[in-house]
Length: 216
Ligand SMILES: [Zn+2]
Ligand SMILES: [Zn+2]
Ligand SMILES: [Zn+2]
Image (cartoon, rainbow, N blue to C red; front, side, top):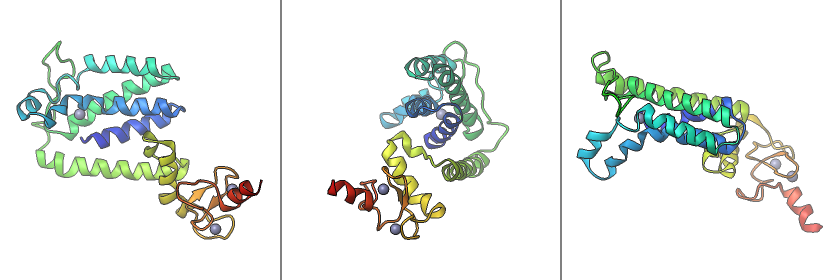
């Protein structure tokens, strides 16, 4: 599956298990990290075909990054658990979401697991992958609507707020001053506000709070 799908799965696991935003970022990184062995696609095709789905998609590497993530985390136990789940989910999704076997114990053993022979490639690439991504995006939107949080927090808390303002608030809230669709939240008074009452997209204070700050 694509790194995007792996990242979204890891983020959803993170949301269930840990409260700290940096801990959630660690889990997303672990969830995508197995694809590090695919980085050769940018350099040389032969190495790519020789190495993708080898050392990265192995628990030898997996346990190492799970431990590193737990060491770097605030909530060490939950991040350790979440990282193990996110890494395992990545391997599982690649088994059902690609026609390319993985070697989960590389380099200790060549034992390979794959869906070739069980699932035709067309089913894997024209059905399973797009369907999985669609379901993931729908789940992320539902979670975003209920919990008011988005995967954009991986990049920055500010970008997360902006994404919620653009995609979630208009469907959920009306401006508390004028009743128009809300596109943001004032960071000072916490009121939901429309585009007119939000002085700029980057300034997250409502016009009333910004005005009173100017007067003082
Ligand atoms: Zn992978
Ligand atoms: Zn308004
Ligand atoms: Zn305000």
